[in-house]
Length: 563
Picture (cartoon, rainbow, N blue to C red):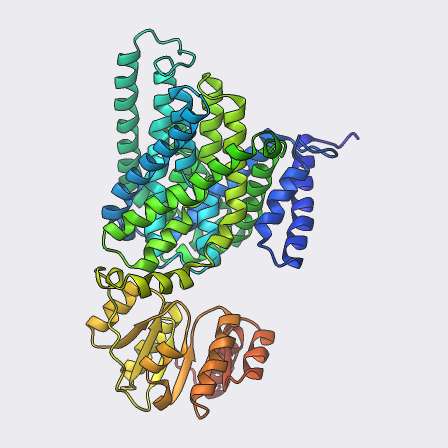
C-alpha cells in the first residue's frame, strides 16, 4: 500500500469505527460516547484485528481537549471565574486530598509503596476535562451556576496536576522510586516549586495583559477583510497557537492555555462567530479523545484483578463525589448544585493517564497500578452519563428527609405565587428570552419568567419581576407562574423535545392559552404545532419575512432606515 501512512490509517480507522459503534450505542439507547470508547477498545492493541497508532491517537485527542476548552472559555468570562473562586479553590483542594487518601489506603491494602499509593490516589482525584464538559453541554448546564462551579473546580484541579507533575520527578527517590539525576533533592524540590509557581503567575499575567489586547485586535482585523476562510483560520491559529505556546513557554497544560485564550476572546463581539467556526472540529476531535482512551484499556484486568477494579471505581464514583457533595453543601450552596457538581466529577481521564505514565516511568507505580487507573477511567466514563439521572429524585428524597438542607443555602429562590393576570409566561431567560422580556417591558406587558439558572432568578426577583427556578417545566412551577390566568406562553429554550412536553402540559392546565415556541427547522416547527403550539418560530423564516416586509414597505422609498 504505497499511500498507507499511520496518521491517515489512525484518523480514518478511528472515525469510521467510532461512527459504527456510536450508531449502535444510540440504537440501543445508550450514550454515544460509550460507543466511542468501545471503538477504541476494538482498534486498540489488546484486541485482535486492526490496531491504530496509540501515540498518534493520543496526540490527535489533545486537539479535541484544546478546542473544547477554547469553546468553554468563549462562554466563560473572568468575572464568572472569580465568582466561583471561593468554592472552587478550597473545594478542589479538599476533594483532591480526600480522593488521594482513599487511593493511598487502597494501595496500602494491596501492599504497594508510599510513592505508588500517592500517584495512584492523585490519579483517581482529577476529573476528565472532556467528559465533564461533554456532560455539562449535553444537559445545558454550561451557563448555569452548577456549570460555572464545576468548570472553576476543573481549572483548579488542572493547576494542581501541573504542580504534581513537577514534584513527582523531584520526589521520586524519596518515595521509593528511581531518583532523577539531580543530586540535591531538597534544592531541586524548592527550585522546581518556585519555578512552576512563577511560570503560572507569568502565564496569567501575559494572557491578561498582552493577550487581552492582541487576541480581540487580530480577530477584529481579520473580520474586516471579509474572508470567511481567513477568519476560521485565525480562530484556529489563536486557539492552537496560544495553547501550544503556553505549554512550551510556561509549562501549563494545553487545555489551560486554550481556556484562557477563549475567555479573553469572549470579551469580543466576535466571540459567538468564533465559537461557531470551531464547533465542527471540536466535535470531531472530542470523539478521537474517547477512542484514544478506549485504546489504552486492557480488558484482561477485569479478570485478573476484579476486586481491585471494583474498589478503584468505587473511590472514583462514590468516594470523591461524596467528598465534593459535602464540600459544596458546607459552603451553603443549594442541594441540587451539590449533587450536580458531585456527578460532574464522578470520573477521571486525561491527567490520570499522564500521572499513571509518569509514575511508571519513575518506578513509583507498577504496571498493575497503571492498568487499574485506566480501568477505573474507562468504567467511570461509561457510567458517568447515568450518574446524572438520579439527581432529581435524589434531591426530592433528601429534601423530604432533611428539610433543613433546603433552608441552609444562601441561594433560596423566592416561590411566592404570581398575582399577575392576562400576562405572558416566558420559559428560558437566555439571549432570546431576555430580548423578548425587554420588548414586553418596553410595551408595558406584564410577564413572569421560568429559568433554570438560580442566579438569574434571584437577579430578576430583586428587580421586582416574578421569576421562578425550575430545571424543567412542571405543573408546580406553572402554577406558581399563574399559567391558568395567563394569556400567552413563550418557549424560548432551544430543545424542541423539552418544548413539546411543556406545550402538552401547559395546554392541559389552560386550554385557552396561546403558546409560541422556538424551533430550528420546519420539521421541528411542525412537531410543535402538532402537539398543540399556537405558533412556532424558526430563525431563518422570521429573518426572511422581516426582509421581505421591509422591502415591500419601503419599495418606493430611498431613505435609509434600520429595522
